[in-house]
Image (cartoon, rainbow, N blue to C red):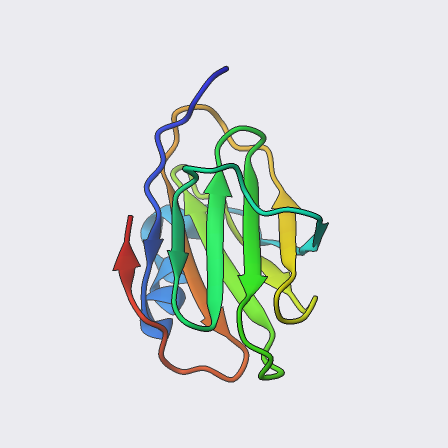
Length: 131
């Protein structure tokens, strides 16, 4: 089983914007946008995650999957912005509702670091955490 080096970062909404305009991401032709598909379970144990009381997002290196779970029934849609070196970046969104895992299935090159930023449709401030 191959494992990838993973760096997961969650930051404020301001960082979310910076992730889409940083020079590394600027070389990509266009962002990738996906709606999460319903997942019966969350990521594998030990997968790096970022979270606050309203949302949890994780990256599962085995299979290149980004998981997202709305933790609070407040009507907000949740988004995970992601970026890797080489200019590839995008967003995984969920509107599946509170308590449900969603997954976006990606195909990233081996050995890349990935940045994840979580934010909500009605949120101007998201708790920062590093894993």
